[in-house]
Image 1 (cartoon, one colour):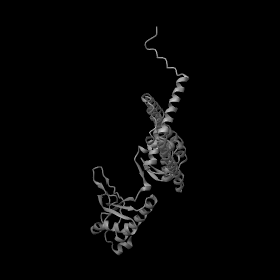
Image 2 (cartoon, rainbow, N blue to C red):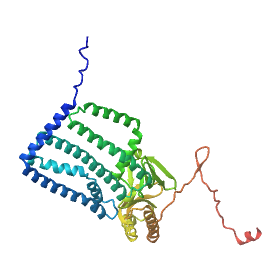
Image 3 (tube, rainbow, N blue to C red):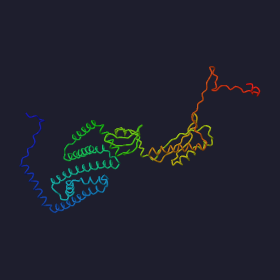
Image 4 (cartoon, rainbow, N blue to C red):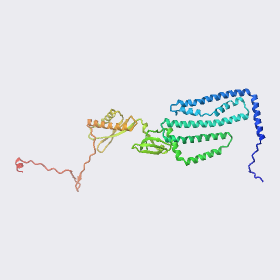
Length: 395
């Protein structure tokens, strides 16, 4: 006895059935051609014109690419994408546009629609891949991200982008064919999650490298500060960034960890600010103390720097403390360092001219007797009595 849930046998297709279908297709095509020969001729002419126009547009791609001097401009990116337009896609676009005008049989219209869908989906995937990769290459070269490691990473990026866009294209085509793609999409999702978990560290650093390229927090050659470290960016790689420290050492930090920190791009500074504490003696004339901020401003401006502010800060242990702030209109640290040196010496000379002294800390020590009475740090001086000349001679 046959089980109820056993699979039904597949219908057999005989050679007579195939011959009948071919004969029916041929007869319907002949009847269509006989009844609509004028429309077919006009449609063929229109389709040929459209195909030639699209072929001409495709020929613009290489010319756009050659217009860029470096070969990596946006015109070159779009030019290479246009040049990758397939002839099959051009033919199917022309056929799809004239199908309605010629009123073909249902089987012909269905075939053209299927082929057009197939060509359009994979052509869109090709264009998307070229535009994405072209945009990444444009950024890496135009923004000076030309490290060897990052250029080698372009092979992996190209592979990932190709797999992603053509996997989506395949799902779209299968869905248009009536295939239930739910299981396929779920399988691709589970597989992608498994691969992502297995290589999450690599992918995190890879995407961090792409974030550096597109967000551009810094580029190769920039002087940056992160945490308590400073240095110059030497190379931005697939997994890590190499930074030359201020003491000559090479620092290597993963891209993900680097982007998680606060980064100060010193190369992009508009200016550098210097704060200079200054202490003057308590004995300084009060009018001079009142004029001190103006004196400091004059010396800063005479040395070509930008005065910000100056004023009293606190009463120190041995000085009246002021603070001076000024800006150096340059990004590099050495210029600000030299400016601080020049301003400091100019203030010192001006203080000499104004009679302002910069005190140094002093300390007086007192000694106490056992009973607590202070003992002076020098012996008592005995009184001096007048001595007659005769007494002096006797001595």
